[in-house]
Image 1 (cartoon, rainbow over the protein chains, first blue to last red):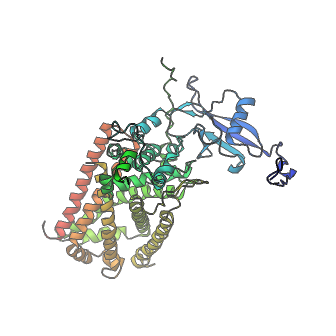
Image 2: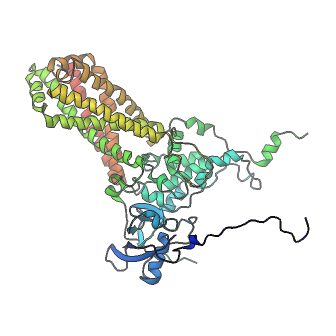
Length: 282
Length: 160
Length: 114
C-alpha cells in the first residue's frame, strides 16, 4: 500500500431528521418530590414542580433541573450519571430505580412521585443513611478468607474462566440499596441482613479461591438471616446490574439444607506454586 | 483526624406492612405469590385452630353417647354462608400448599435458572427460570381444585 | 435450635401435610359417597376410628407448621430479644394446647380415653 493512502473508505449517511425536536421539550411532567428536613422538625411533605422533558431526559436530569432553576434546597445524591456508582437510587411511582438510568419518557406518566428508598433512615429529602446497610454488608465478611494467606502472601490463586463465571454476576453489585428497599422482609424487619449482604455472601462462597464459608454460614443461619427471605424476588426485579440476589439467596439456602455436603467437601483453589508442583517438570 | 458526622437520622422510613407485605401490584409475579402465601397461611392457620375445637365436638358427642351434639353443630353450619367460608379456606389451603411446593423446590436452588456471564440487558435469571411458569400452573391448578371443592360444598353438600 | 433445622422441619411437615391433607380431603369427598354423608355422625365415627393415626400425624405436622409460621410472621413484624422469646414461648404453649386438644379427640375415637 502506498504511503498516505486511506486503508478503507466508509460512507456515513447522516439523516438530519434524527436531530428533529432534540432541543424542544416533548411535554411537561409534574414531579411530586418527597421533602424532609430534620432541622425544621416539620415532618414529611411533598413539593410539586412542573418540569419540561426533552428526548433522553432522565429522572436525575429532571431533579437537577429543579435544583438549578426552581428549588436549590432540594437534596439529592448522585455521582457518575451512568449507573455504575449506585448513588442515585430512589423510588419513582412506587418502583425502585436508579435516577440516572431511568428515562422520564419511558415511565409513561405525566405525574411522577419521587421518594427516597425504603427501609433506610432519611437524612434529608431524597438522601438516605447507608450506615446500617454497610454494617450488614460487613457482617457477611465480604472478602476472600484463606487459612494459608500468611504462607502464600506473594502468590496468586489459580482460577479457571468457568470458575469466574460462577460468581461474576454477583460481583457486579454496586451497593445502590434498591434491592434492600424493595425487599418485603426488610420493610418490617430492621435486623434482617437484606438481599445485598446475602448475595455478597454467596459471591464469596461461590468463589473457588475462598475458604470462609463456615464463618459466613454462621452469620447467614441466624434468626434474622437467610431464612427470613421468602423468595418474593423483588430484589432481583429492581437490581440495575442483573446481580440477581434472589438466585444467590436460594442457592445459599440449598447449600445449608440439602447440599451441606458440598460445603463440607469444598477446598479452596490452590495457588500457582502448588499447581506447578502437581505437574512434574520434564 | 476525625470526620464530621451527620446527626443521627430521625426518620426511620421503614416501608411497613402495607408497602412491604400487602402492595404486590406494579411488581413482579413472585411478589404476588409471596403476599398470597402469607395471607393464606395466616388464614388457614387460624381456621386450623378453630377446626380442632369444632371437630372435638364429635369426640364429646361420642363420650356423652349423644350424636345430637355433633349433628346439631353440623346443622348450624350447613348454610351458604358457612360453606362459602369453607370454600375460601379450601382455596387458601390449595394455594398455600401448591405455592409451598414451588418454594420447597426453588429454595433449594432448583428451577431458578443458571449462573451465567452477565450480558446486557442484565435480566435476572431467577425470575426467568422454570419456577415462574410452575407458579402460574400451580395457581391455575389451585383454582381447578377449588372448583371441585365448590361442587362438593354447594352441589353435594347443599343440594344446589 | 439452628434456624436451618427449624426450616428443614417446616419444609418436611409442609410436604407431609400435602400428602395427609389430600387423604383428609379425599375422605371428606369420597367416604360415604360425598360431602353431605361424610359429616354424618356414624361416618365420622368410622373415619376417625379407621384413620385415627393418619389424623394424629396430620395434627402433629400441622401444629408445628402453623405455629412456626405464625412465629415467623410475628418476629418479622417486630424485633427484640424479649419480644421474640415471648412470642416463641407463647406460640409453643398455644401449639401444645392445640395439639393436646386434637389428640384428645383422636384418643376418644380410638377408645383410649373413655
